[in-house]
Image 1 (spheres, rainbow, N blue to C red):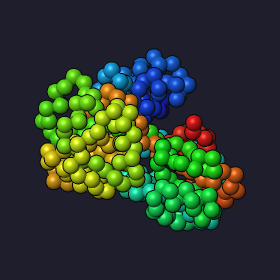
Image 2 (image 1 turned 90 degrees about the vertical axis):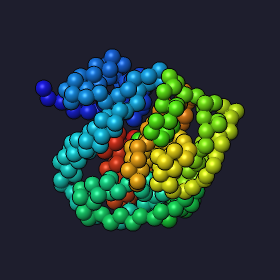
Image 3 (image 1 turned 135 degrees about the vertical axis):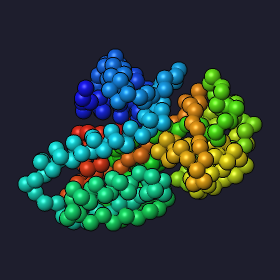
Image 4 (image 1 turned 60 degrees about the vertical axis):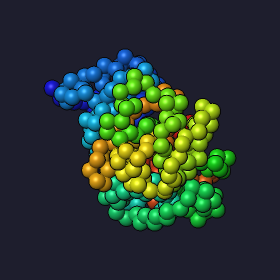
Length: 306
C-alpha cells in the first residue's frame, strides 16, 4: 500500500504540535482525520511512530528518524511546485541573513543548501550574532531578514515574524535513570537532581521562567554554552536537563545513550522562524529566501504566525 502526501503532512503536523488536537487545528481538519492518518501511516511503514500519553504524543526513536524523511518529501514537492511557478523569472541579488547560534548549528545548514540549489543567482550573506543584536540590525536595515528563535523576540512592535517549527522541550535522562520508570514526571521530581543548564541563545532565561512559574529552582551543577557538553554530561550520568527536540540526538559523542521523557507541566516550545523589519521594502532575493523557508515548512507561501 502506498503512502500519500496527506499522510506525511498530518504526521509532521502532529510531530511538531505534540498533540493530535493541536495538529488538527493547525491543519484545519477534524481530530479524527489526523488520528486516522497517523494510525494508517504507522501500519503502512510497519512501525510505531508516536508514544501516546496524557499530554499528547511524542516521537519514538523510529518516529524521530522518519521526521527527517518526511520533511525531505514535503520540501521536494514544494520545491517542484515553486520551480514551476518561478520558471519564467530568474531571481538574483544578495540577502543579508542574521542567525543565532542554535539556528546556525541545528537548523539552517540543510535549508540553506536547498535554497542555494533552487536560487543559484542569490548570494546569502550570513551573520551569526545574539538575538538582541540581530533585532537591532533588522530595525536599522543592516540585515534583510533573520532566522532565529521567534519565541524569544522582544522588538515585537517593529518586527514581523513567521514561525517555521515549534520544537518541544523534553527532559533528557541518562540510560537506566530511575525516573525512566516513573508513570509521570513533574518538575518537583527534578528539584533534587543535578541539573546541567544550557546558556546559549537565552536558554537559561527561558528555563528560569517555567521553573519560576512552578515556584521551584533546579539544582544547577554546571552552566555551559555547549550543547555537546550538556549531551555528554547527561549521557555519562552527571546530571539531567530539559532541552528542545531540535537539538536532541540519542547518542553522545562518546556513543552513550540519552533518553527523553515528557514533563507534566506546560513547558514552552522553542520556536524557530523568520523575522524582518516591519514595513521594509524587501528585495526579490530576500522575498525568495523568506518564501522558500515558508513554503518548505508551512506549505503555502508567506503567512504571519500568530
